[in-house]
Length: 485
Image (cartoon, rainbow, N blue to C red; front, side, top):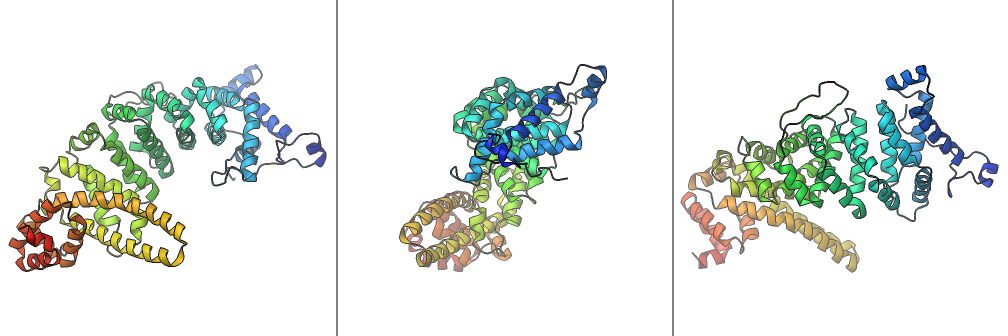
């Protein structure tokens, strides 16, 4: 059975003439109102013993009711790809306003409080999420503190579809500037949100859910540094709740970094966008000292984080057989990963896992990234000159250069720090294994000079001991090095 069957419409023209249509749509007010009435009956049955008993144990929707409420869900669906002037977007707004007018959020709150049916709760949260796509309705939903608290409690639900719809609703609200602070403050004051989110990230194998929860965490950290600091420092062991058991299950202390890493491992092979989200969370953590400490002062000294990120750069992203243009697709996730690696390298230079004898492949990957950026930049510029009007060409080039420049700056900073730590033995190993040669060294120098002259000079001194001929050739290519040595 389809999760969201097509919604019904008013079949008779006389119904439309009588004002039965919702706004300018062909959807029937009478039909939609009848579904809301059925919902009320589901959560408020007649006070007979049989009905009372049925209310306690009913965990499944009958097929007719599920079909009807799914139609209502589909009617409320906001087409995010549409402009505000698009007729279909207007249709969704009309339906959302009708639901708001007839107190659908209050009815749904009754469902959340009384229903034991996961499918019914999922659909009601989903409808609320669709309604929240419209600013005024989102404001109304967000200001209802009772509803807000109930929705946050659903982050501890055991039903994955409900968790997914709850996360979508939260992300929708957090993405609207007018109400974002309401939710940030509400989440900050509710410790169970941290525990539930960490539990999901550390234990779920549902990639779609992990991506959406990651987007919520990413948005929260981006909006509020205070909340991020609180979550970094948090780690107390409390029960995370499915309240269906008399003895709440106890979980180990939740630390934000291991939970983020576990989620990243789950999504990295199946969902590039999800990987980007979790790498950006790690990058945001490194923007504060407490976040860097949380990464590098873990029991393994940050080795798990380094190993995961190292593997992504050296074995998954921007590989030798990839076309240079791949850098455009991967520039965001690469910038996040390299930013974290750079912060870790600067903080953990004495750790065994960052010793240069183990990290020559990473230097080779950094140089390959710079080579691909150069190649991609040249091709993009040539193509834009040929095919685009002048104004479009200028604006597009500026935008692309901006994102690539961020990646280049981060890449160069990490590469310069690593090059100046190389010894003669490291360089000989790099030359023998193909991570270094004249072309690659020239690319590195071209991007590092003049800003990182000291690092290049230090590398060149070690290179003279390993390969004097190559060092002399590079000095000829870059006369500024010869003049200052």
